[in-house]
Length: 114
Length: 115
Image (tube, rainbow over all chains, first blue to last red; front, side, top):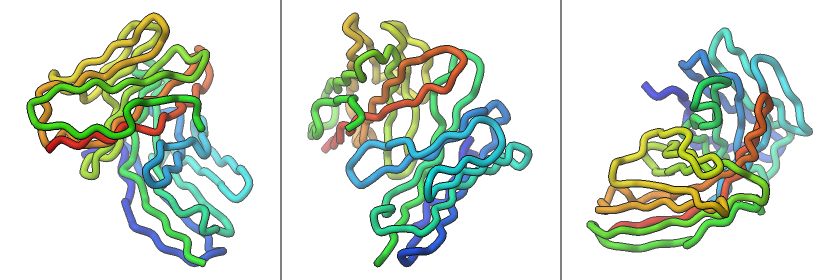
């Protein structure tokens, strides 16, 4: 079992829809939870990060972390065709020699059609 | 543009060969990470260097090795290449300030094709 599970999709929604992306994980040591966006043939870029449990909002994006359920979510409101990309969840631990390494989900491919 | 540069962008080679991938981190970043992205495995951590020293190892094969030089650029060496090594290889860098979140900035990647 991979440490981070993410449904690869693909997910196809009309413009303006609310998109929900999710990941589950098994390692209780994870403290930082991130969402990266990756356009085709590009490197991942950070969208948002959250420390421990809770919600974080940035414009049309909201990240939620539920550590008790080992479940994280990213919501995109009023989705736009420019949001079409692969969304990767990532996590890292807060201690030990592996402090910085990221554990990624497989990524969910999102298409927003006009 | 993340500020992380990787060369070459594309590499096509044959099985059994050896290649070197190069990464220059963002100015001021001391830490370099290497990741491999394949269709079946997703993005997987290979190895991390901090200020010239190896800090953490992930799922890196013995045929692969890396180093970070005094000017902080890093090279990933892949030898005895197999078809299954075909993947995108990303380098990421971060500043690594203690007791705070350190964002990893990813380069554009090197696409390796082994024929």
